[in-house]
Length: 351
Image 1 (cartoon, helix red, strand yellow):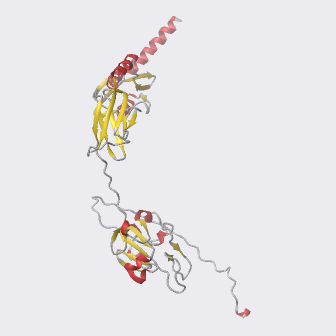
Image 2 (cartoon, helix red, strand yellow):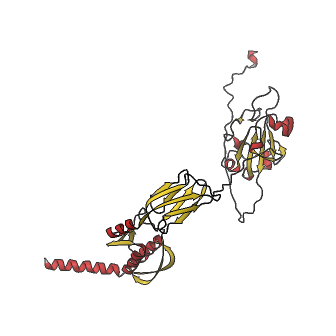
Image 3 (spheres, helix red, strand yellow):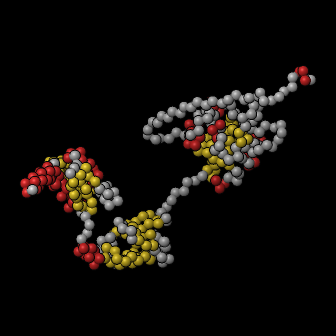
């Protein structure tokens, strides 16, 4: 029995020695833990396991190892990042070092209570600003007077101030019990919605009529035809499509007459065009957007020919993007022939 124990102990010591005899050569400034763990696996064959919730694998560290033992690498990494590791066969488990009782006691003695005031550039107190302690789940909000209070915070903590109306701001406590924080108001550039009448671009507020606007990206996603107007089917509320023979295909404003044409006016970059000419003069991939003017206000711009509505097509303009882009769009569509056999027509014998 003693001999068996001696043999097992010797084998385990040899396995441990073989584990730590693995060599690593890796040098990088600002290397992430994930990169270092990957180098360990590729050079030594040891798998490194860690918890994503507990360990920040994107945390950076400066390392310089030249033919170093695996144990030396792990010991130095543990000292720099407050980590502990265990080795089992060919697997390395890494996790954050838990603070001791004395460390937790010292942190509780070093904690302080913080009171502060948050104001903007004009000196106005801000209400409802979130104040969070970085790296923890502690936080609060400012009251109506812009005042906040946090209890039991580390004297070396960092506070994060955030809100819808301000830019995110960080402040290091540095042992201070009172803070006066001045934040910057967030300026948001609102996207202006414009309406193309064919003659000019006007803002949405100046447009008194009813309109619908379809972006060019939405048109490109439909491949039913090379005619850009055919691709509007299902994208514009109130746009009716009639595939019957001899009838006007598109209906924007409804039926206003029995005999008169119901065809809307098509305008391409300010020039009226016919529906049949559209596939020949414009590619759907070149369309910036399409605006459909639906009510009678369009007649004040285009006259009586706009009585059935106007479909305004705006093509893309050249942009200095710096790169050449090539797109290919191919499609095949099939339509069945209409079946007229169900119609019971009179023959000459029935006359």
